[in-house]
Length: 633
Image (cartoon, rainbow, N blue to C red; front, side, top):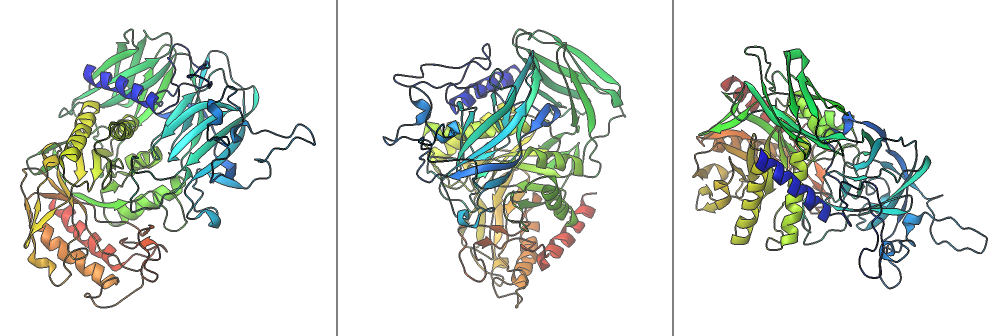
């Protein structure tokens, strides 16, 4: 565990590298000055995100935010293309939210009278003029605060796509890269007693050296796409914790508690009242304590899709207290088997995007997320692949509650700049943020380090380091990746050096769609050269909902349905097959899909159409999963 904590400290330092001007914890909320020759910026510390943010006293800053579209970044750069926030005064940008002081004072922007966006939400789906817009949009929210002495305050963002610059009351807090992971800034000492102004510059421009890179197969929704919170903590607070069953041990909880603040040496009580268990640990000078807690025999209800039991866990220090709902379960592999709580399980899954097919845009809240997960359950799924990036914390908590196993993924997708250290640092940071955020969620059983990354020496080194990183962060879960396959004649081979670094022989295959067809695909066979559980992470075919023809006609529901039936025959012949996540639960928007009739910028591989209609293959997959459920009772 000491090694894990060292890596978490390292990741915290790495997080600071993505924020402009990180500060030391001993001086929270103070301004930094003289940020290099000729420039000054007052920047708050970007701290490690609070574990269980929704368990904190907080003010939700969601709602209607005023916005200004700024394609030339006029509000960020002066006419010499120098950032205003790095000038001697630090002023001059749209973040000043300046009002004319007199009738001869010309101010060429105004949030007052500007249109508004619903936050959380993207701009592409809320304004038809912005449907294809990639660039900068400024967003402003006003809120009232009454900061208290002895309390610390954190401005937390669930996600902003892709790059965010954040300003509070005209002063820069910092910046963040990564469109799907949370970040926060400490704002203790910066809040006004009364009205405050937060301004966010969001830029969803794609870049070759970002994660993800230029080329993806999903819509690039820009904006503040998840909750914004102002969280309050005591001066010394519980910053992080991990409470999970020890690897391979159903009788013991293993984890840690981490305090932040001045009084880091304290007694901390961890208890689960329903099980009658409690332990008191003492944090060291760094605020950290290891937790080992024996569980009573024959009393624990282990979390599973059939019984998604969550226990109320209390963590209390001298200065702070938190409650969380945590499921207890083990996950491991043995040969071809995936063992959930020691029992072999078949992962009856489906892939899905963080997008509502019925209402344009990202999933907006619990109702949207519950709808998607319930559709999966209606198909008799016990498992989902949340592709191709971290989904929201709310989604993972709902999976905990509803009893759905989760494959969680980072957007190391297709071909990126494998040899650039800064690109690896970005990928490693997003992976770290995902693991740190969701490590207490029982539903998450697999951390995925990427999708369809082509084999090469630089790629192998890059992905291998990601595998090492995630294992150091969390050794209780499985590590996976969606690998590619290779074909020689009629044999489809899974052969990738990365497979040696992960726990699963997990791969995408598109027999019958991108290669072969329904008549010819059954002549193929799969050769998997690893004594590991086989998970097929993608297969499928596009079908326009309501378009009917024979099973040889592509784009028809009949073709998609027959492809599923054929695929089951192919995959069932693989001895180690232990699960699958067909692509995809619902149709979703994609700029890569321009066919005017069958696609119209939608990926039509969904088992449910954009109107919510279930296609024929939905019922075929449901029937297949019912057979697998009986087989693995």
